[in-house]
Structure formats: C-alpha cells, structure tokens
Length: 73
Image 1: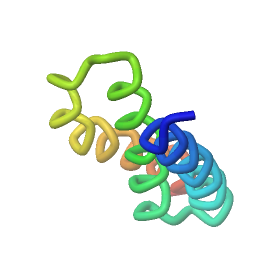
Image 2: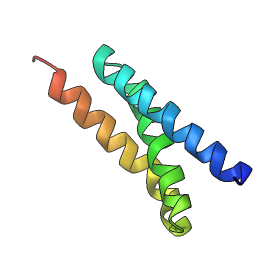
Image 3: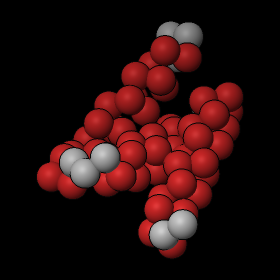
C-alpha cells in the first residue's frame, strides 16, 4: 500500500474520532478539525485536488451549524 494513501486513511480515522468527540463535548474546534481531516483526504483520494482549498470554509460552516444545533438559547 502506498504510504500516502495509508497516511490519508489514518487522517480520516483521526478526523472521525475528533468529529465525534467534538460533537459529544460540544467543542467547535474539535468538530472543525474533525471535518477538515475527513473531507480533505477524501477529496484528494478521489482526485478532486482543485476543491481541497475550499475545505476549511465548509468545515467552519458545519462546525457552526453543529454548535448552534446544541445551543439551548
């Protein structure tokens, strides 16, 4: 297996754990990095390298949405 692919799969697994941890503890930064670590390697693996720079804004929007969905006020 190619080392780059193995590293990207490890990043995806770490991203899933960060996302779930941030979702349960309501930590916006953990959700942000979790979504980033999942979306960026997936886009790179399927060959959509042009879209990778747009991952941080998408991750920021998703982390804000998750934060607001748990905010009781």
